[in-house]
Amino acid sequence: MKKRIELVTAVIGAGAQVTGCRFGPDALIASGIVAALRDAGHAAFHDAGRSAVRDLSCDADPAQAAQAADKMATVSAFTPRLADTVRGVVANGRFPLVLGGDHSCAVGTWSGIADAWHATGRIGLIWIDAHLDSHTPQTSDSQAPHGMPLAALLGHGAPALTDLYDWRAKLLPQHVVVIGARSYEPGEMALLQRLGVRVMDIDEVERRGLNACVAEAIDIVSRGTHGYGVTFDLDAIDPGDVSAVGSPEARGIGADAAVAALRGFAGDARLLGFELVEYNPELDDAARRGAAVCRELVMAALGTDATAGAPPHAAAGYAPLAA
Ligand SMILES: [Mn+2]
Image 1 (cartoon, rainbow, N blue to C red):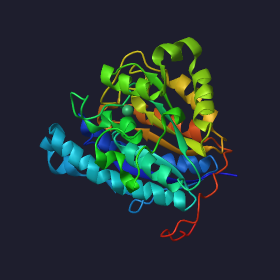
Image 2 (image 1 turned 180 degrees about the vertical axis):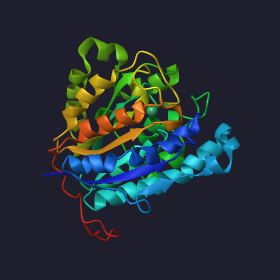
Image 3 (image 1 turned 60 degrees about the vertical axis):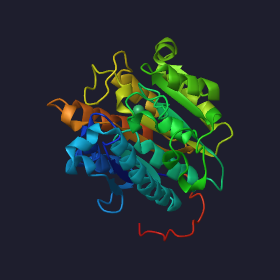
Image 4 (image 1 turned 135 degrees about the horizontal axis):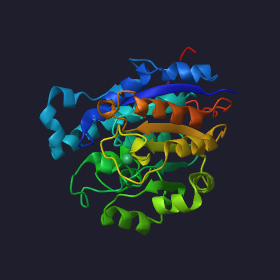
């Protein structure tokens, strides 16, 4: 059974310091990712109206990008819109594939998915990233919201990000694994360690291999949960393979190794959603290598023979969509 995939575009860059990743979702759609999923046998679609959530503040006011207070206000306004859209996708029995955008969009994506499944149980999350994204406003020097989404999902940070749907801690620490971290501040690692989140840093990835880390991560995030999601920050990849990110960090995961490891998710019915963020087409090379790697990562993770998860519940307020 193939997945019924709805691609949701999270068009936002205001959460980052380099905001060109707001062009990433549309560039990936234009690169043919929907057709590629269909060719792989999935029922995939993207509705440029209903399944696109857009923040255009950076276009309207370039100076906005530099102003921390405005960034948080912008992200706080965007997040519930994205959450509601993604929640609706799940409630309609579709598999959400979210294309960012800066990583602040993860708060909307996983709050929406967590709430959609909340009647059934908890979700787990595998966070693949060069960074920990676990700042709170108290620990962040830059105040950039894309450095805060994991903390917010764990219930720490600005209430506008932690309290969507009037409940906090969309993720429990024992249901979260971070893979590939190599650049972070002490405050965010201190939070994750205090909470007991399993962090597989780049040293561990290099020592054990990414496949082994992913396999253990699936085991952890599946334990006691209804299923799990994956959020993949493109900056997890080594800058030598992909330059098209706003916060590159040396000594990353090889693109080929990442594609191979993501095949570990294909066909796993416990996979409830997939998110790919931080692709910045303004920083891509002439051959569009970054976009190509993004497509390969998505295709590897979703595979060609995966089964769709059952709809969580016939949620009130979500009319069934025509196929
Ligand atoms: Mn990130």
